[in-house]
Image (cartoon, rainbow, N blue to C red):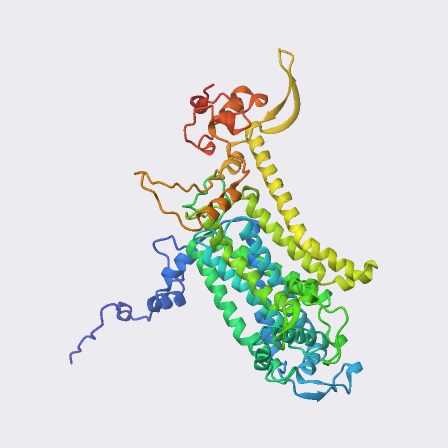
Length: 604
């Protein structure tokens, strides 16, 4: 009897042996640089279907510079994450309804009091849901930190010139985000329907009523009839938990995507140019830092939320249109609007054709709010038009290297401070025992005078810092050691800067005001636009009084003649032949001042 051998498929030789064998899957290797590296099956599966490897490789190798000021924007990002988590928790118990109920919860002082379902559910979350009060406090404090993070990040971007080309669109997105954050905050603290939030909604109703012609119709549309109506809380709830968060998250993703596309800005220094970024890749360094920073932000927010009470709605009681809380103010990001309402004079309300025109309310609310954010959004384009700078910028400026821009920002902050103080003029009058009328007149005066004073002082301070940098580059550090020369003269010995420290002091570009030539190179008259004169004047104003950067010849003369004979002004520098090289291009300038690399620049 003959037997036919089994046919074994190719690649299955292990079945030929008598003893069964098992195939061992090689463990994946984290060493992706190795030619024999293997990857987790989940990543392999995803890459085979959606090509995830290319995107991951691009994202994980992205380099981010390392500087503490870049973490200001991350405060807003991580606060937004906390907001989404805590807000999801609160929606499980909050009832967005103005239906009338009689309270019968655990807070004894309000037992038997009539209130809306929204207010009753807020009390239920605060006193009966485990961890509910902490979640409410986390949500409110993280909302404030979110706005603070956006404000600090915007200030850093503004004062360092990070909004310049190609990042104007990203600046506009950030400005819109800050506006939506303020609106989202107002909608959020209006939801509990307590006496304080109801007062805020009542103020919003007055703002809309002040709109010329359409004010009444606008109010009826939003409130569904006469104030307060029964639909404002449900509508604010939909806007707060659905509409605005979706837009904010979408804009946040777009904002971060443009940061990756444009590459991150960086402060100037050796090896840092507009074509390169010096920093750490996302994996593993930056991801570890960002993850650790999230826990820092979350820990501080949780600590503040656990120890510092905010928005105790049970103290205010339910909203009653016939009452108003004494000393009520909105959150800090709306102080300037409240202060403007208190400073605008009453004579701005008048009647024409049997219609009341309340410009004393309209200007401080419906006009001021969009105007502030419109000015912020338009500033990068206005500065580019004034300076004529159309180049790409990936290196940041020190604030004192742009004195006019820094002075403008400081003047704007001073205006906000005046309006913020004006929003508590009644409390200041009581605490300081002053006349509220005198305080109002004082704040009205300061609103126009203080920004001018701040602009002048900040600009002079920036110019002084530029002169200090110039002196430091030319003379070095003061050592405190006095030396007597053979001729009997005394001078203090200065220690020169090393090339790395000097680099950051001389990298700023010299100011170049726009020059409008009436003729081109062929002698043909060039047509000038109607705004050329205004643009020329603004360009001159923007660059006026700037201190010129130290040139190689000036640095060479300072080292050749000694600190006491250094050239201090552009007039003397003009007498020295310039070779067109930057000071940072001659890093070999030695301590003694006799380096061979700068001998060519010493012509007396």
